[in-house]
Length: 229
Image (cartoon, rainbow, N blue to C red; front, side, top):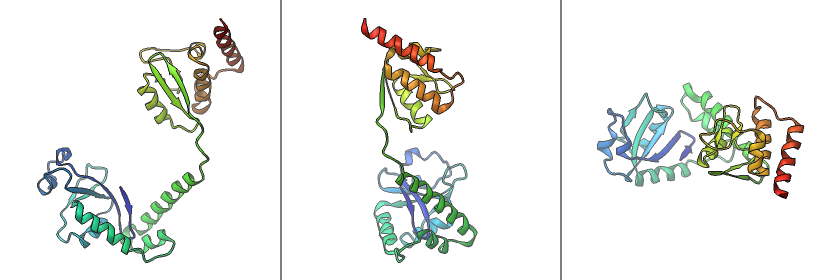
């Protein structure tokens, strides 16, 4: 959970001492049983100070190797009380970004405002994103792959691997894992959607060998010819 309060930005996840591999961490002794505490992480040490409103003797840890460097564990029931305090903190009726900036230490006030603007912009783009197009599902020899025009390359790669497909470095769809190459015609013969997918992939990711309209027509003709037999 990401939490933007006017005094702090925090990230909270379930704490499991068995997954705490930092040998200098004090938390396994504080919370040896899974499910009793929340691990609260921060980008700035001052933000953890806000938790002292409900845990005055809060133990914090500086893990320089972690993504979120500044950390604490809090009992779940106390963390619920902290969230209630955040509701009570809502004394503003607009311009949350400005409120956050005014409540930050001077050294990070500008950086926090910039981060809030970036977050606002990213979420605003989601609001104006048109409805997602219907996914194309292509059945292959060892599985299937679903694809939409707005799917990121990482998502596409993950879907391909789950369906035992594969992609080369240009984004070209290969027939299956263990197969070094697949011609457009071979891909097309799997299904008409398969060839359409390959074309769209190359348009999206700029494959090294663009397919010409003539190749499209040729492969389409082969598909129809094979279907009529």
